[in-house]
Image (tube, rainbow, N blue to C red; front, side, top):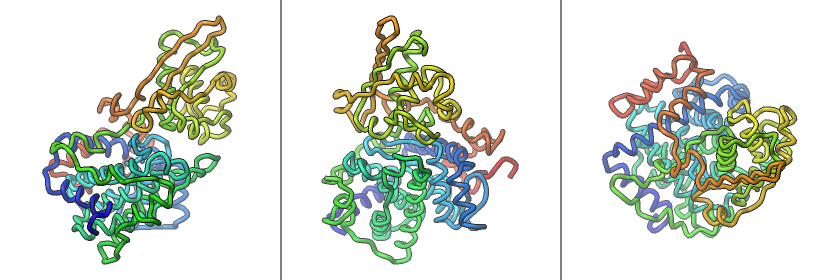
Length: 451
């Protein structure tokens, strides 16, 4: 596979494997796992994950389903990846318009369960999977994201990298796993531009594809070496005018401080990440004394993709409310908090509809120029008395530029997992903390409370 993008990515993976895991990367991988497991517990009781389990019939196998049960590794990855993306609370890699954790960690955990991997092996696999998947996502870029859901496409390749790393795959097998995953990649934007439940399935499908691709490669199945950059490869087929510069670029510093897993956005709000900067700005205005009843209109300026993906003006369902900047801005101002309960509240209730109708959306060239690497917004409130109040947020909460403290991520885990694990959450956090110091994946109790 000389000279191909797949070969370059495989070289990065082998380089990462050959070096000790720096503490900073172990910290980042552990925090990513904590965040993923919490949102997966939360999503495990939702319709997509439960429907998959019910529809696939009674299953058993060596890989655990978060929240209870077990299944063969590909199916466990499918269910866990789907659950992880259900609440719209899973992490983001902004330069790639990509949710890496949902598919990558689901694939890594399924295979790690199968082989009873040491905890450090799981953490290493996350570092590798994130790096490969995020590089592919960044090179696919906004042109790809216009019609394709990068979490389903680049996510398949990242999931294969994580699964292959858990298995300790050699160079050739690793490269074929990436190539095979690329040809199984899918996920269409139209799925979440309507009232449908299929969006989380993109992450689950990517996790399953990664596990299957790694297994196929390990068994001797080969993939097309130029499947990413070829004339009919993933880039060309999905509208990405990519030179694959990010995939080919060297890893960087020995400490790994510039690797992708250390540059993710961890979500503070259960909704589309394109709305976060607007929410931050509205909450800032509220803290400065703006009241919902004072508002004549809210003028929102942000980047174009935010309006295309999350600009639903009159959301009718819970899914649409999570992708409606007008609704989310009104919730932030009226309730002072954007939580699962407030986001899902009926737009006709508590005067939210009138407030949402007062939101005016426009593309701001300054924020458009910084997209996709950085996500910001400006909100100006015009009051009924004619006064103007403005808040500008250059970088959204949870981003690498404005990160959530680790303790807040752990609190998020306890909150989102509570319905399933009850008071067992702190114990599970302690077990996760022991993964790098001799713990194993089998030590993690990821079933419901009392199991």
